Image (cartoon, rainbow, N blue to C red; front, side, top):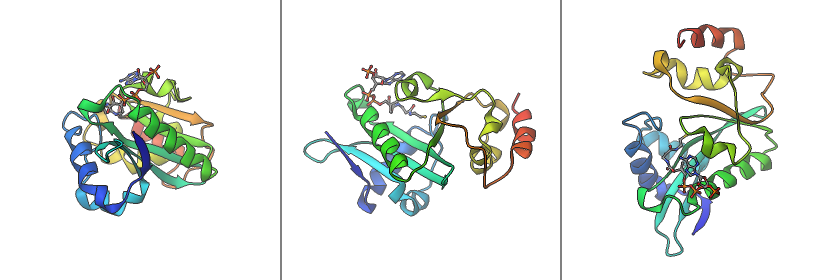
Length: 173
Ligand SMILES: CC(C)(COP(=O)(O)OP(=O)(O)OC[C@H]1O[C@@H](n2cnc3c(N)ncnc32)[C@H](O)[C@@H]1OP(=O)(O)O)[C@@H](O)C(=O)NCCC(=O)NCCS
């Protein structure tokens, strides 16, 4: 198994796998055009013979924050190290960019604890994530995801401020 940065020809595999997990809200649904536009965010895992096994993406908000998104491994390939390898590659990528805060929202925090993530009790501590995804999310009022960060919680944001994020998050409780 090996992990590498995605290329455009990976987009259909990424699209199929990510959207296969979006029906129950495990992952955010992502249109094919959006996957293509953001393919350079993605890392893929593949078998030694080049069979696609899984993917994950690192979205950059700015020097203060990035986010692990769309991390998923094909059903038959789970439990063999691909997910962990993808996540480690994304963390290394964040470090290469000099970004010290990596966030994510998840239903499986136990997987991420192993890689240095911790729970952020107050989601409004991550206003950029709230304004990028949550405010338009159909589950805004019944969010069942845990917010997590690796590294420090950023002091700045670029998409909205903490006070406005608190107003939105209030709706969710
Ligand atoms: C989560 C997921 C990416 C893990 O991929 P994977 O290839 O099965 O994981 P790995 O084999 O690399 O496991 C790495 C470690 O994490 C643990 N782990 C794997 N899945 C886990 C889970 N759901 N909860 C807790 N720990 C988990 C493994 O036991 C292993 O621990 P170890 O190093 O102590 O042995 C995969 O199960 C998946 O695609 N899940 C569905 C999509 C999803 O929920 N993505 C997260 C959205 S935020």
